[in-house]
Length: 358
Image 1: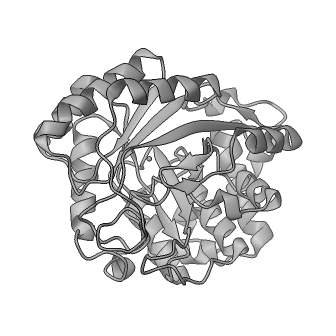
Image 2 (image 1 turned 180 degrees about the vertical axis):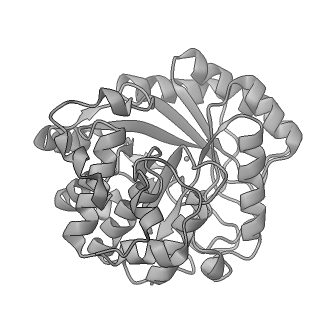
């Protein structure tokens, strides 16, 4: 069992903290699997309906030709992935796709562009996309790379709900994957987006050759931000031919579930999203992830440039598990949790395929 000081034992595990240590988080990650899942599921039930999962859809509004050298990404101009660069999509085409997503049950629409940072000439179109999707009654998310303060102000004024900017991995391992943008620059962008009043979507990718300590450290960094990200996407690497990580060893499925569970425990009120890599996951693995606290997925046939299970397969899995889609990404009231979720009394156990890896 996890060793705790008297002060730690007195804490309510369902209340967000920003003072996690690597040692403490590492102890959690290494718990016996059943103990770890029980603790994560207990915290999840105290904050959310465990049988509801939020559905988002992701569209690449500008594909390929990115100046960044992210080792996982097919859209980098540095890699020979064979992906052709495209221009920024027209607004009406984006809105047509958003309408389809809404009809399919998505409540949040995420738009990603393969940029290091947007150019001033592109922002009018991006703003129009945000305004148009908002007018459909959907939540909006953008992932555009780094932003100037002017960009942030324009996105906020347009009504953007979420900005996705993943930290990807631990600070230690980061330079093994990306050299064109620093870890500190990512944290700076996240901080400025939050300061502007927008919600933050930030997570990472596992299975890139990192070790267990790197996965733990990535989650410690996110959980110790001044405010936890509102959404935490956990991507399983899709090893794309032509990228530096094309031969990466896949992460062990049990270790992937451990990562999901640790994210739920450390960020109890955040949405934890199963993102890229679900096509390689069995139904049983996804079910374990939902039990461990994942409560958001991307729907649709593609995630930017990679495959996704598709609505029919997701609907079939939801039916088998008794899961329903969440109407919106509004937090459940812990006090209003169903009375039959009485295991909460045991609290003592307390937006990018990978291209931009939303």
